[in-house]
Image (tube, rainbow, N blue to C red; front, side):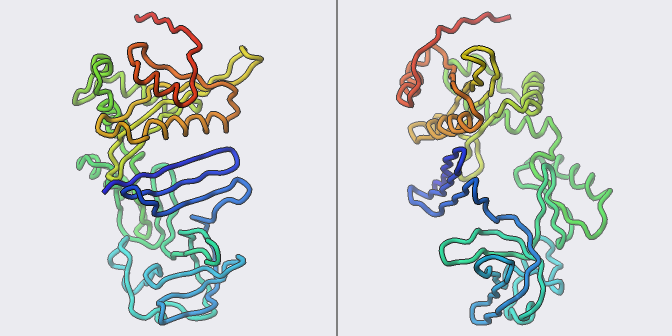
Length: 321
């Protein structure tokens, strides 16, 4: 099954669509003037309990009451499973009309429907996701190295109170694991003769790659963007740099480079989606000019960029040390 996430972002609005096998499944829309409610936490009051639907309607101060299903209600009596969601056959054993309840929004209101809620609160940060009502330590499945998983789990458990449940995110991995994971997949996209000649795909990766990733990670004006398929594999990437300058009356400009798409995914629009995202990001950051670098031998790539509206404007010259 092929799954794609299509994103269109501008200054005033961001849109995302989930497409499976060419068929639209979900659409998400967020306007700058009206931010979504997802992840917001509210202290609500149960207004109605409907046993036939195994659901309750919660008043959280919005125009419409929000929806809470029994499967999304934490039950301390059956919490031995920790992070797993406990199930119940009778919602009246969990909530009653008039009860106050702490809830988090998992789906925005749409049309005549109110927001969807859960009582499984999650508080994400860069490295951890804190789950107040869970037990134990979970590690993201995207951290694949078993030794690294055990190291992270032991490090967190050593200083963690019994009642705290974190989920370690991929960014929590040691730099050599985190950068190596992304770099390895990114470099595998350099599968054409030019890319293969320039890059060194080894295990472990050469140290200069890690230094470069660390520098990119700490530079707020550089973004390394990757596209993933439905299985989480990196199938495309590009690098976007926002550059201040004195030319063109001090106009800020953007530089797109290092655009790569896996050979088995070409002609599927991934490269165009990446470039269009970069153009929207540059526009949102106030750039008046966008430049793009590609090697003179990549004739097909040049035709592709011209089709997207880029024009030949400069002669590039290089000195290698």
